Length: 237
Image (tube, rainbow, N blue to C red; front, top):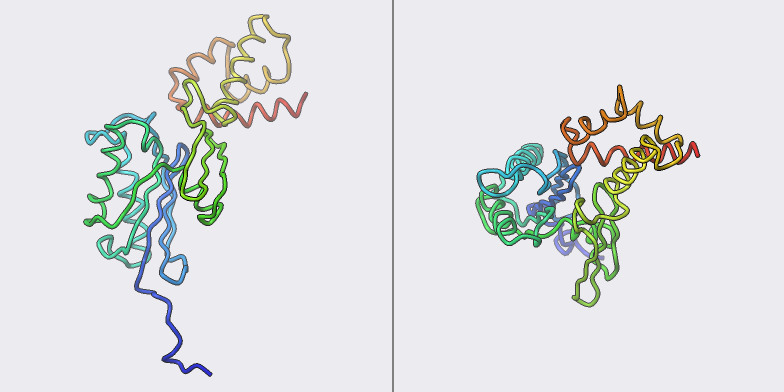
């Protein structure tokens, strides 16, 4: 029988930070060496569609600073004491200036260089498959597929809402809004979608949709949320 001193104790003093950014929200999680979750927090999304900050990070720094501070306070762990951290952030790797800015952010937050930064698709793959070979497909505000096999990586999609992200909530909503405009001016037979969107957007006239969506501060997330209304209309026939 093994004695108490022969049993290896979990490394409770090791603490790891995971940050999963996204267009809709940013999730923060602290785990110790035994795998026990020590703290969690969520914050606003971090998206390159947002206004650029003074550091070129498109407003990412305040979101990360707040989330890191909250989970560290909850777990009574100083950022400088974290064993390692990984930040999965939208648009990383897709623009040299933005990628450089994102790579530099964690050092300001943590006070050390024991961290990695990558695209948020890496978090989705790692979390869903436990680092095993395979493919993860995400379809949230945006859409993308990413996979790894024998150390090789590949991605498809994730081109952004302007000319990509097919199958995402934002894409579905835009397709629904386009159908609504065609119903309104007679290019498409009217259907349940017209009434659903009129109620959801509180339109006095159909042309008000332009102001509500383009000038009314609805934003990328607000447009994506209209995908639920498209689904509602589909259920109505």
